[in-house]
Image 1 (cartoon, rainbow, N blue to C red):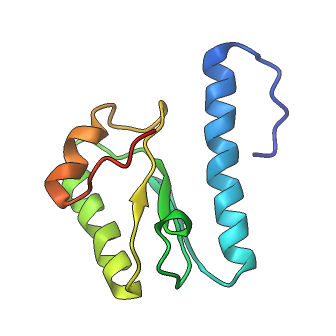
Image 2 (cartoon, rainbow, N blue to C red):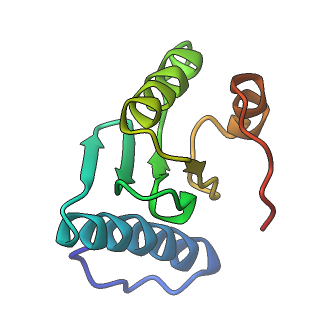
Image 3 (cartoon, rainbow, N blue to C red):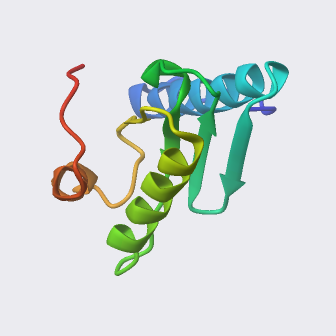
Length: 112
């Protein structure tokens, strides 16, 4: 995130925190030679480690009707890399009911 946050409302700070998490994770994975897919509707990062914490989606803004297809695309990439994978869900993720889609594709709730 390159812009300074001037709006200190809870919603703005939550959004800035999510952006920082997403970009920070991507920067770390790049620094260690991992794979970062920064697409308009998804940002995910992966290292060739059997540690799900380094392999995760950190930004999603999925268009209506593409949810299942995009989730399956991420799963296919994780399988190709042979790594466990997490999908972070934050307040800015879209669709807002993303947590309803992920279990249908084998994801389980790892908690807060």
